[in-house]
Image (cartoon, rainbow, N blue to C red):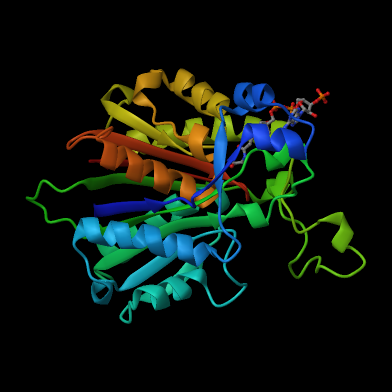
Length: 326
Ligand code: UT7
């Protein structure tokens, strides 16, 4: 399978750490030193997740030279769908006019884009689908408790996309060499949105408790993220038949610079071979790797022939990784 094009879109509105200092008891210094985040993007009230995803998709389609009619599968990874149903993938299908596509969403939180990548790989390798659009898109600003300093400083909105196709064997197109994914449902409670679903519907009585916003045990998530992502990196590199020395660039989930450094230190990969944009966007969950991959592609941070390691971690718990020869 090859990645034939990438695209991304972030909303115009920038929310800085200085503005957050006025909302909650925090400081630019605390946010930067504990996370590496300087600012994040916030979608407009009338901008839904599918709107962000559609803009990213159009850029990926343009780069790949693919028309909407050619798409035969659209997978959207998101935890902030436009509606419980239909799937956000169906709204993006409508926006694009992609009449020939089968569309569904994946809920794997921050690992969602890489879950979509691996799912597409199976569809493409079996010959079931030929031209696939995957999108990671989130409007987390609508799911954040803006009174909780433990979480509201971390998240942002945005979308990234990729076009995937079967690779022609003798071509010099990029090639997905390995994909890994995993889950641990024993740890659902350390990062979740507990309310608003069937387990705990929002009622007039509990609305004040903001149970339909993100709750996280930050330190525990941090610990789990480092171990799971390190192991996922080791497996993806081994499955690709490579060693860490062969990896030209790591594109990790953009949650916290300290988590990323802890992983790359353990793997012995220097910081100049790590792609970081969380300072500009914060944690955009399923969109984070998709946006980072597109920026690395368009800025030339990754070059033809480079072995690129993608790795993610999120609620579920879920984790995933992949090695792509660019
Ligand atoms: O997307 C995948 C899932 N998410 C993640 O990967 C996030 C994983 N976790 C983290 O990135 C980090 O745990 C955080 C950035 C969330 C927190 O950093 P930390 O170094 O683990 O801080 P902490 O939770 O241990 O809190 C240290 C102190 C606490 O005060 P006390 O109890 O020591 O007095 C917090 O109340 O920092 C306080 N604190 C803050 N202070 C200023 C927490 N949030 C803030 C804040 N501003 N925004």
